[in-house]
Image (cartoon, rainbow, N blue to C red):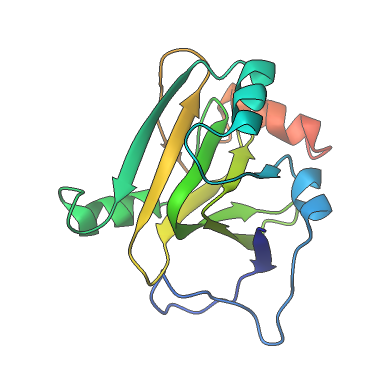
Length: 177
């Protein structure tokens, strides 16, 4: 089951949990209120519930990525790139089939929420939400990336408030100017 919490302001290793002291947990309803969707699945690549979600949401393309120093060329640079705050023009859909990592998302007050991903967790980040990704201290995740149609993975680093996806996200969240 997914865990999420507000992050501290520490500059320590990005792969550390970064929980506040005392911890400030974030519930699934709070994630849903910022457009983040979550399902707990089996962790199997051929999960039946995943097949239904894919059909219902139109996720027609998928691939698998393993992020680990041994399998990802330029690992340290890639991890730094993934951790740069950015948004996408489409949903970002990830299903963890092995290992673990963190997605960080901004709440409506622009504070960081850390979402811990482990085997079986499926997360959908809405188009236009500022976020970033990092592994945890285990340095390994195997994830299925899902897309509607052909894969597009173009990050727009913050600030990207001029993008239509960002404007629509803010409007949906009741934050439009």
